[in-house]
Image (cartoon, rainbow, N blue to C red):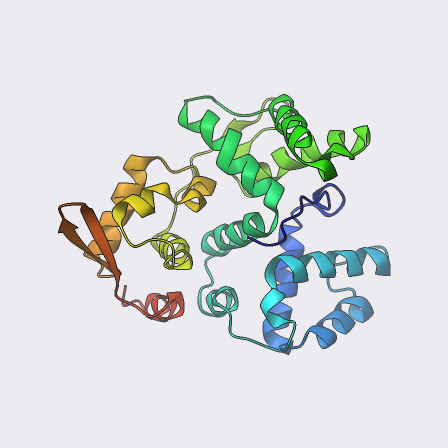
Length: 263
């Protein structure tokens, strides 16, 4: 799940979702990080006021989404999806997933207090709750404990902004949760990203990644049954519960069939 350290980069860079899509699409065209950076700086594709700002954004996007490209172009599952699937709703949710997996502090905030409040029926979560999360984290982690008061103030707002930017919440003064529809291909993407860790139905229900999408057990069961009906997986009942068999080598095979309208 990315670096083990908690980072506060979020407060200065943010989610930069529009810039992310521009830069990743340009990378798909150029297939070279050096050429990509040159294109960004010389032609200011993301319309920023300074070279330093462009470079900061480039570095963050490289860290969040392009780690597999550092040794040269690689057809990663993320780039494969971006090339084959043009639905903005699908792309945004997959980018959200990768974003959360690389931003450890965001991952723990959403799979922890955010999911807990949502599942308990609260209308939303506020900056007071995000600050409490950060303060508790500071008691457990020396690096976070060294943050300045200003950093805590900025980060408590930034954590809430992630949920708004990716449309899991709406509103500013009293933000409330939004129910997000999870397209089947996004669910399959998430499922196959965890195939090394999910071999039984119980493993599936225990997988923390699904909490990022604020899914409850009933919703997860519906999505699992749909994956079974579409032959994405097989379920075999045993005395110890259902075992899962994967019918595709990887998510890229599923993306190919999805883009061709076969599933």
